[in-house]
Image 1 (tube, helix red, strand yellow):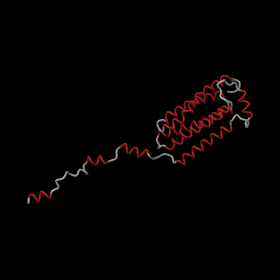
Image 2 (cartoon, one colour; image 1 turned 60 degrees about the vertical axis):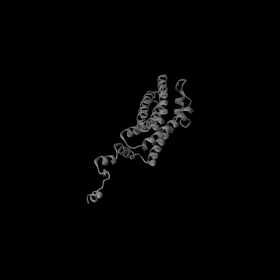
Image 3 (cartoon, helix red, strand yellow; image 1 turned 135 degrees about the horizontal axis):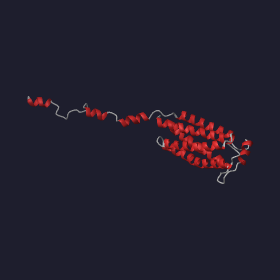
Image 4 (cartoon, one colour; image 1 turned 45 degrees about the horizontal axis):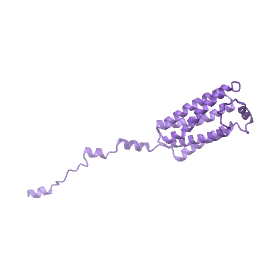
Length: 206
């Protein structure tokens, strides 16, 4: 009788599935929750491409409006008469470099927009938009308004803003930061060039 009673008892290991330790083990970790939260919030591909297209289109229109070419003879004559240092690249180089730099910035901007929303991401996007706007603003200052001093100062501001873009984007999307590096490198040279032109042409601009 005793054996039968003992035989009816479950002598296997106790079920620990409902124990506090087991429940804690089955709960999602904080890092998993963070990763899940970070997987949402980025712009859709269509929306991101749309904004990038608008930025590139606006920049192209402003650049075209101020280009020192044969369609703008007054601007062209003024630019050709400036005293420029020997390190000044040919016009064709400027015409090839700036579109390439802007495309690089646009690729970085697209990648930033697609990243999950965060304060750091938003700052990087704002810096991208700001730098894209300043490119057009610089051409307006230099070519159309002939403000040599203001354009030299603007070049320095763009260099600082571009460096901030690289530093901020590197903590959000490293590829986006890399795409902005050629822009910053070129701005270092362009700032020196703009300052030399300002110094060498005191009577041709303000």
